[in-house]
Image (cartoon, rainbow, N blue to C red; front, side):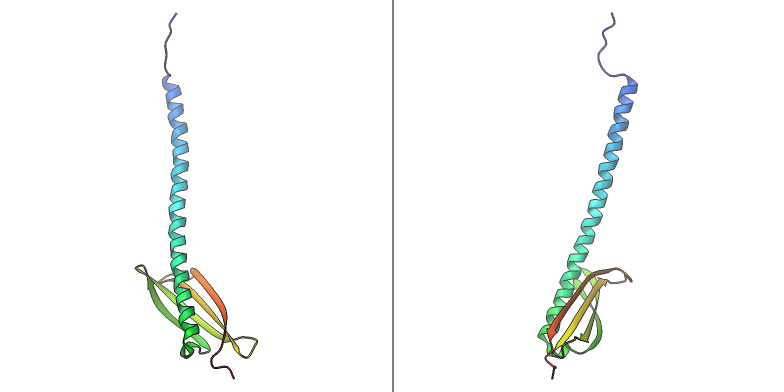
Length: 124
């Protein structure tokens, strides 16, 4: 009787193929996780820019002019473009402040948008 122990070549090849397939799935998940993490970091920084613009707008009556203003701001070595739109609200003593932030050079990818109502310093 020939009592051999171990795996045949075919069994070993099938095991390697199954392992490789599972490993590729895990690598793909890891790659997506890194990409999503980077996008989340950009969105967080864009939100900080929007909040900073909002604070400077509500604390400085000179900036509370109805219309559209744009500029750039940097956070952690990234440059963001922001746009602030101030419009009259339904109540005469309020203004609506809308701020949109995107990465510089990106045309249509708004990373953060912030809208708030504020009592206008210039209201009658």
